[in-house]
Image 1 (cartoon, helix red, strand yellow):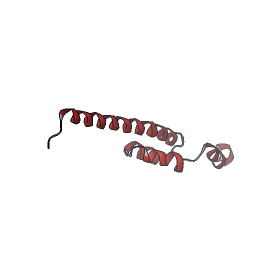
Image 2 (tube, one colour):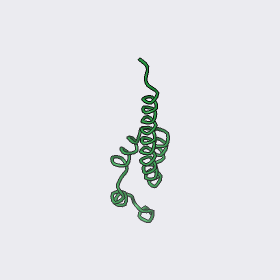
Image 3 (cartoon, helix red, strand yellow):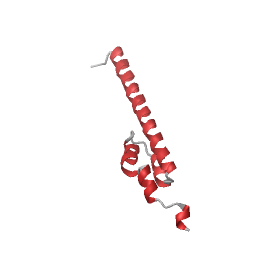
Image 4 (tube, one colour):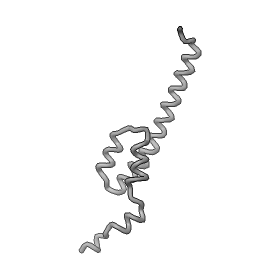
Length: 84
């Protein structure tokens, strides 16, 4: 059974919409996670986030589970003056 040309075009257009949506989703989450990793000097996470494309799953895990919150970071990180 052969697909009708209009049906094939419809599926093709749907596929492109899904791919474009997933790409936009990935770019937004990756940009946020890369920004957090760069601000916290976490080179390993930065490289991993840059290399692996996981449709936003790895960046979301990093942002919500791994990256420390700003208040926690400030409370636990000694200042350079405190180390002397």
